Length: 280
Image (cartoon, rainbow, N blue to C red; front, side, top):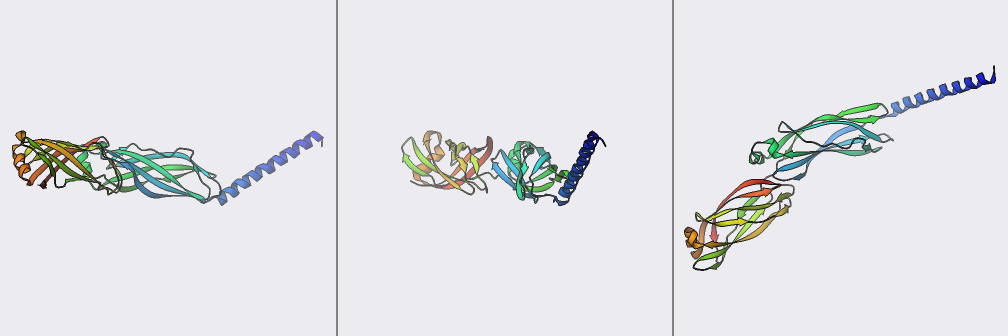
């Protein structure tokens, strides 16, 4: 056999051996490959106000194999009270660690005005129903494996802070009027921080309009925390005759705040009415 033909035969034989070896390695890899496992971990409020909330759905992907895997495709939709909202996804190409567990986080921004015509009605709920649909595709030696993301549950609806007066203190009384310090307690009833941009409104004492109160921006109230404020107000007796009698003598009088509480750009009606003892 000529040398040239012999060389070609050797090369062809080596090629067949290599192909057979690669095929064997692929079969071996497929045989040794263990299917990853995707489980739902939790739904958490990343941040919330009385206007909206970011709800993170967290899944855990366990990869028992000695090689890392990549996130190949994502098909995801998120619904709250039956209405679809804008939802984010993990980045495609995300590497899933070898022999480990990785979190896949799907954030959704829920604007309450998109869920209910009247935000106050929605805020009266204790919880809201959510539903996730879709799948993720993981690139593996077996090809792209798809895992369902279907899950239903509830998340905590933000509660309006509790607002109440303590006993007012009369600090100065003249023939024309009085200066009164109105102690105000604001409590965050939620299990998560809540921003409060301020409380403001018209105040009545003994049925007479005496002026307006405003707290200014209260910042972020920590879960379950209480903020105590003291709001001074000068009251003119000429325009508030009924209040003048109560303030001159001290004692009890009905106090009513007709106002609003601001949180996340959303104004929520606030109506506080209490019978309070005015101290000198």
